[in-house]
Image (cartoon, rainbow, N blue to C red):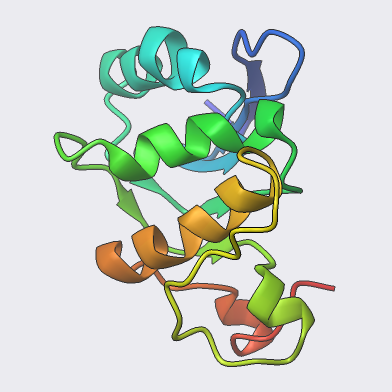
Length: 142
């Protein structure tokens, strides 16, 4: 079978959760956004398992709206997940301000979802040891 590209749109309520897959066995995969936490718990986790997906080439978090980022937080927080992630594209507040990504502080003045969720991703990516914005030498994805 020739190389083929597939796009799977998982149920994400009003958000997005897209899985791009290509190549022959073993296929390669990119996850774009994660929808709500509901999406991870009720669709994405099961899909990864049922399709035998144990590695993602890239996880892209396009922006910090809750309906795009909440499912990524659920994925990062799932201690049972053994899915290897080869790279993450996500621009944190620190990235956008030209700072090093070393802090786990969350600004108490920001909303309890959205922007705060964006900053909650920072320590989880670091904890998992996932490469971050690698193609951009750690600088923001532009």
